[in-house]
Amino acid sequence: MTMKSNYDLTIEYMFEQLPMFTRIGDAAYKADLNNTLALSEALGNPHLKFKSIHVAGTNGKGSCSNMLAAILQTAGYKTGLYTSPHIVDFRERIRINRSEIDEQSVVDFIAKHKQLIEEIQPSFFEITVAMAFDYFATQGVDIAVVEVGLGGSLDSTNIIVPEISVITNISFDHMSLLGQNLPQIAEQKAGIIKDHVPVVIGESQLELKDIFLGKAIKHKSQLFYADAIYETLDGEIEDGKLHLKLLNKSLMLSHDIILDLVGNYQYKNCKTVLTTVDVLRRNGWNITEQHIMTALSQVKKITGFKGRFDIVKHEPIVVLDGSHNEAGLTEVFNQVKSMNYDRLFIILAVAKDKELSKVLKIFPTDAYYLFTQADIPRALPYIELQVIGLDAKLEGEGCPTMKEALDAAFKLTTPNDLILVTGSFYTLKDAYAYLNLMK
Image (tube, rainbow, N blue to C red; front, side):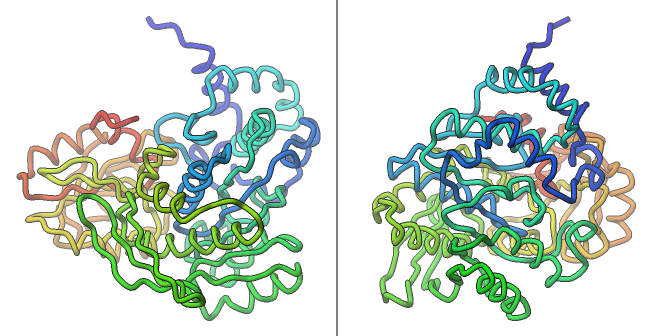
């Protein structure tokens, strides 16, 4: 029997002892910042010791965070990156210049603060945020890109006062916690807007403009809409990369960008990122056009980013994408429709708290489905998913594990087919492991 390492035991403790959204869903969400503030106070308020960019939004915040981190790192800044969830290893959540936090630092942090943790009883996410901020402060980062976990105003990350607040877009997700309509969800996400801190909104949504404008006026924050500043002139996928031409409408300057993230939704994310960089440059950050072009052409290599329309195999084409809400999945299926293949196979696993009735309506009925489940307690059992899928006219078969689903898919496909693995980021860990693409 293999002995577990101190790191494995520490992660086990975090997963089992601390309320974790992955495991128990909404019950892990703390509707205030009290625990985070108490932790931060005990740690000497590390969040005040580094500069940051705060990134919220329903979809695209992970892509934007990784693109911004890649650009800042390429420009020579020691750059922290905090994202969630992880796909393979917990340490993916906390990085500096591509390197994940080392195992010993995770072990030492939990061991040193175990009494504090047991007194405060924070959630898994709260203690992870505290660990990230402590690590960034200790390591002396020049700036950290911090992705919101869920919502905005009550998210554990919302104790920082950033250089810029970024909100990518607003659509339906986590409605039981954030609100039943878009204005309610927008109010939550707009909660990251701070006094005198510029805010970049990725997408203009008419019904939400008054909310963002009101918040910006209240906080005396400059407000920038990325899609009002940048226009897409052209775009195509070539040699596994997205080739984009964007026009800055205020300056009448065009940008030719080669991006190694190929999802069509990256058109929108690129506008958000470029607008954010424009604001950073105006505020004294030394970022050149060459830094931007170099970084965007190799985001995955620079930050280790994965799980967003990641084409990991050809013949058959295999795409891994963690999209899990209506807006994100719509973008994925639009992209799939534009690709050349004979037959489409979709390996699907979802969390049990998803509103499947809305989401499944957008799934293509001409695909063959392999219904499976992620190896987490919050996973919807594959048999239940299969029954719901068949009711929605999605034909296919049930597979107890991702390995069995991929085995079945490869037996059924020819080299000209396409396999899409989607429905949850937690689904992807076993897919990457199967395909030996963890790193």
